Image 1 (spheres, helix red, strand yellow):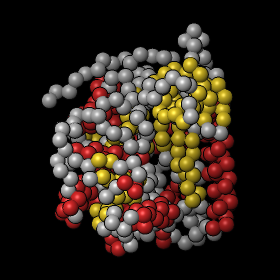
Image 2: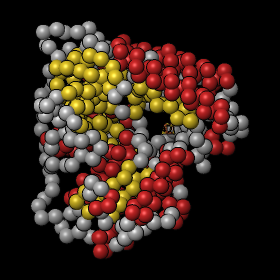
Image 3: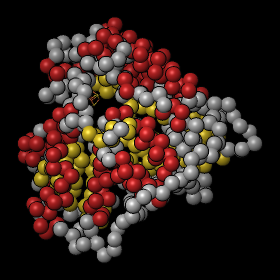
Length: 445
Ligand code: SF4
């Protein structure tokens, strides 16, 4: 029995999909690389904007058009936000909402007994797991889900429910399994990983323990709420296996808009955090999300937000036009921004985002960084530095899934061209090639 997975939305959705794929494999399914080869299509949907919801519907219909015999199952945030509409879409055979997502296999088998595969011949655990998104090198692990905040624009508390964390030991075991299985980078993900709590432990304790359990693989953190930053994390970056990268969601660079969004910080507080992290970790990449055209946003406020983002000199800025999500406070706010104005503001914010990314890359030209090589096309390898710079190198030598020290040479549209670093020339701005400071530990049964 072959299943094809489609994924929309954020890194958290990707992490869930990878987890789901492992469960399907353990149950005896094989993962199809083309939709046309599959008997079952599982779509992990998103509804963070109206475009994401529309794309989720389009993806769901695609399989049915290709093959009317194909069974299509929808899960994820779009289903959670509007289960009736999701289940009634043409070509959709089953919708699996948030509360029963963990039982998705059981739901599918109850609905379609002919899709139950024979049990796998060999025990598929402990590894290898097949990575889905990043070739053969990076994988995502979800540590927490849901949110107890109520930012005016956000649908997540409705689609993902209250904040809750996965058990500490389960995460340690999963990360250990994945790195033993060959993944060279584990990306820790969640709605906001800074909300992680398990008994007396928080994100700092988790990362500290993960570094004890990791071999030479590296660890990357994702979304951290700016108001929840645990400064003790900064000390852990002496360990070069921890990628120099933070994602702090800004949402607006104008304090008045932040207040109306119900975000609990000011633009100046955000700036102070960015400056502190930059001065503590040389070369760190700080990335963010910004919403453009929140209801009532004046020209002055839009300009303030734009200038603020520009001055922060971030490594990457993801800009989104405001999209009213039914059931959120912001969907009912007066003074929506006309489309033409929103488009203009988006255009300018995207330009600032592009310039910021270029500036960040250019600051690192000539320096050295640890690169995880991921995939190649026609002899051109693609990889990622620990500080989130996409890099390229022509090489006949197979580099896939290797971490190597490289020198960054020249920016191009597709990434920064690099070459093997000469260890004889340490270069300013780059992180020294430290060895892991911790010994790898073993898990007790
Ligand atoms: S924007 Fe983030 S903090 Fe605010 S409600 Fe959504 S998930 Fe929670």
